[in-house]
Structure formats: C-alpha cells, structure tokens
Amino acid sequence: MAGNAAAWAGGGDPAEKLRRVELRERYEDDLFLVRGPAGWVAAAVLAGGLAALPLVAPKYLIYIASLVAVNAVIAVGLNVLVGYTGQISLGHAGFVAIGAYAFGIVAARIPWTPAAGAWGVPWIAGLIAAGAVSAVFGLLVGLPALRLTGPYLTIATLGFGIAVHQVLINWEWLSGGRAGLFVPKLTFAGRPLGDAEIYWIALIVSAALTVLAFHIVRSYVGRAFVAIRDSDIAAEVMGVSLTTYKTTAFAVSAAYAGLGGGLYAIVLHYLEPNQFTLLESITYFSMIVVGGLGTIPGSVLGAALLTILPLEFSGFRQWQPVVYGLAIIVVMALEPRGVYGRWLKIKRWFKTWPF
Image (cartoon, rainbow, N blue to C red; front, side):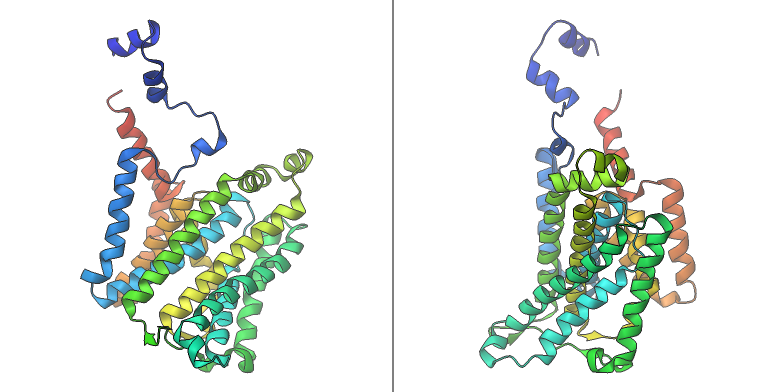
C-alpha cells in the first residue's frame, strides 16, 4: 500500500501507473472479447477443447454442442436488436423458421447437378439463402417498427411470428405442412458428413458470426444502436438516422436468425412447423436476458445454459417446465445483469483483491 501511494505521489513509472488503473481513452477500449495474456491463454484452451470435443465425446453430447452453437447464433443476433438497440421482439422464431425453410427448399427441392452436390454447393447456397431471405423479412418488419415502441412493437413482432407459423402449417406446397420437410444430409467431395463434421461447421459459423457481431457493436453502427436504445429522440437530434439504424438492426438480427435456422436444419435433417412456435421465441428472448442484455458473451452463455438445461432434464418431462422456470427466476433474482454480469463482478473482485 505504502509503495503504491509513494509511486503515485512521488512519480514512479508512468507506464506502471497506466497499467494499474487501466485508463481507457476510446469507446472501443471497453469492448474486447479477450484482454491480456491470461485471457488469450484461456481462449486458446477453450478453442482447443471445443475443437477436440467430437474426438472424445459421445454422439449425444456432440448433438447438444451443435444445438448450443446454433442457438448462440440466434441469441447473438437477437441481442443486437434487443440488448443494443432496445427493440423488443417476441417473434424471432418466425425469422428462424424462414431461414430454416429457405435452407431446406434450396438444399432439398432445387435440382442440383451431381458435381455441385458433390462439392457441397447446395448447403452453402442454402445458408446464403437462409440469411438473405430472413434479412429481407427483417427489413419489412423493421419498417413498421419506426412508428412503434414498447409493448406495441412487441405485439407487432409477436403477430409476425404467429403469422409465419400459420403459413408454414397451411401452405403445404411450401413447407410440407404438418408432414414436415426432410433435409438431405450434407455431403462434401462426394462423401456424407458425419456428426463431428456437422458440429465443426456449426461451431465455425457460430464463432465467425459472434466475432462479426462483436465488431459491429464496436463500430459507429453499434454506437448508433446504443444511442437509439438510450434515447431515440436524443440520438436523432445528434444526427443518427432512426430509419437507417432501426431497420439495419432488424435486418442484422433477422439475418443471424436465418443463418441459425439454416444450421438448425443441418443439425436436425428435418423441419416441422411446430418447431417454431411462440414458446421458441420466448426461449430465445430468455437466453439473452439470462445471459446478459447488451453483451455478446452473455448471449452465448445464455444460449448454452437454456439449451443444455431442458435436455438434461428431459427424463423428468413433467418437472421440466418447473425446473426451467425456476432456473430463470433464480438467475434474475441473484443477478439482474445475467450470468455474464455476475462473471464480470467476480473478475473485478479478483482484480481488486485484497483492496
């Protein structure tokens, strides 16, 4: 203590002073996924463990890990809309469904040449279509959102999700109706891909989209999103175009949901309208609230928690809703900022201990 006080009072190394208080001069300095040598070591260990998971884990755990990667993509996109821009959406399952069926139709119903199919062109084109089509619908939904806020916007997005579900049920020529749509297994170089390869695809796409979202929220676009969330009137006075950035937030979030839907079709190989109900929209919303609103890592943590928890308690089906609900209540009661908020507090405590 005395040494530290002397260093501050009597000079000392300026670089050491700067390191001790961690002065940050730019907006971007507050937003880092990985910070410091220890953070990079932990990130490398995590990446290595995730990459090696299919080599040591049984198929069921690989399947769960693939679902976590898929839901992480959807949750990250939803958090960009809700946590960073302040636009509440309870119809996100509709965007996921659009992406999933866009992928299924491109991969299963378009006649590809044998050469194109052998080199994986159908599923690559399907993922592109899933993101693009969902982004277009996101723009269409985002336009009415310019005049809606709060509960009115929530009801509008809720109606969109229900409308998509009804279209999928009743337009059998499009979705196969209640009979569902079978998605062919992925192939590459003429060889069908196994569970491990599908997991790696889901993991790589999820990691890439997470990093992309992180760079979006660090950019001037992300600052505009946050300004709109805090006060759209003040943001507009400062020159932020509400039309541009609100519709952009919806389009980005919908594109992420569509890509998540495409990955969902890859993992499950089967699509049915009742996979995309209001309950799924509420689940996606719960993921970002439990993980931490306005945080990219919180989206991933919330997706992992609320994907694994129901599957682990699937044997106690009658108690599953109770356990699921209690878990959300406990997390919110103990930490309103979510699981990631609690982690930040723990990390801050260790950095300042014992002072």
